[in-house]
Length: 69
Image (cartoon, rainbow, N blue to C red; front, side, top):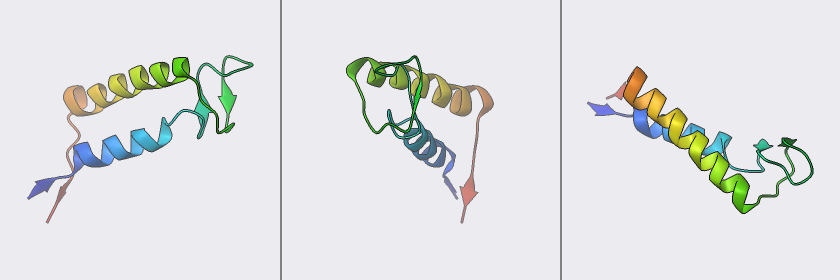
């Protein structure tokens, strides 16, 4: 049986935390902007840190496992 938990969690977090898609932290004009489809280097760094923290929590601390097959 294959463990699809890490794959599913990583893909979902990657899509949700893409800078400018849903939110952008920090925004160009405000602290948080919604759906502006733009990004900056600072925003990429902030979203990378948030992604790393959440994927560590979900995979290491909680231990999410999805078995298929």
